Amino acid sequence: MNNKKLLRSTKNRSILGVCGGLADFFGISPLGVRLIFIFTMPLSLIIYIILANSIDDTPCSL
Image (cartoon, rainbow, N blue to C red; front, side, top):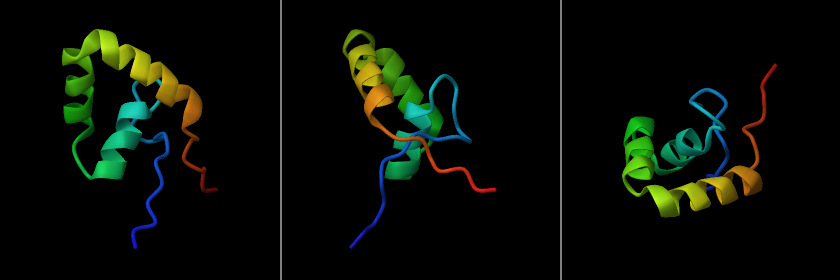
């Protein structure tokens, strides 16, 4: 069983790290996720705002 958890990225962030977190979760390029969000703009903006408020940040390692 896969124990991956969807988290916002702290390393791969442009604005809030949602696209970077999605890319890490699915194992794809963050650029590809960002392009998908750009080309599907009106709906993806609403989804981005919802995800940015509901997904936790990646825990910082000291």
